[in-house]
Image (cartoon, rainbow, N blue to C red; front, side):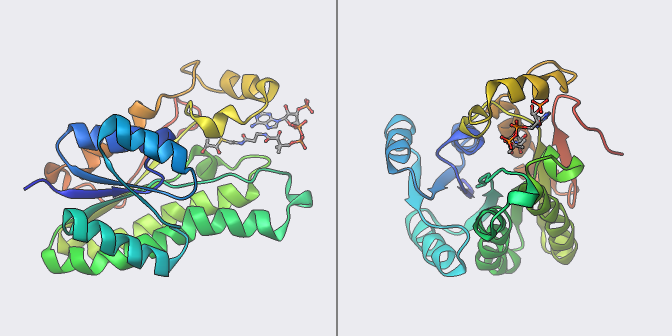
Length: 241
Ligand code: CAA
């Protein structure tokens, strides 16, 4: 039986590449999205992938969303926490809304999505969770105190949840992408973007499919000994370890 995977923020950018990669590999995929109905409808029409709209920053919305996905596709065995937003700006000018929105969508979403799916995974003795952090959670980034804090939090969340569930057949891992060609990075001013690309040793931005390939690797049944890890995919922009 094909395993069921939910990809948050799964109809655009890196999330769309992950949804499509999993779909092509034979998984039953539900692509969650929050706001862009037009993009989600186009994605569904083009790929045939199941889409569902809910706010991943809300526990109640995740409960309802996962219940709908499970009614349509079956028990959720794989969760890819990809949904993320930016509200960039220097910290000395940052508003409470800029802080709250980023922390809610990029970090509280992991609590909400995992909280509603982990008990089923534990009961069935199998689960795969992949959380999307960022190079900017590892190294810090000017204009992104909120985003860097949330994405660093994703790494700590991953390690602790991995420990709690290691004896239940559940792996929890993290991918920390660098700058990848999506709508999010298109929003950066061209002169700033030039400076960023100059800091990437590979000399270019990443492609969404380069992140999706690693997700596929981590969710494989054979990847059961990889847990609590953070895999950097950033063109050499920042190295740890
Ligand atoms: N790398 C290098 N230099 C940067 C930079 C960056 N990421 N961001 C800003 N700068 C530089 C600017 O080029 C500028 O330099 P000069 O003074 O020499 O011209 C200086 O910092 C100040 O920048 P701005 O003139 O743009 O100032 P601002 O107040 O209008 O905006 C800012 C400041 C909000 C930080 C804006 O520059 C910005 O949005 N920068 C990009 C921040 C960024 O990297 N965001 C990542 C988004 S993609 C993402 O988040 C995905 C992921 O996980 C990697």
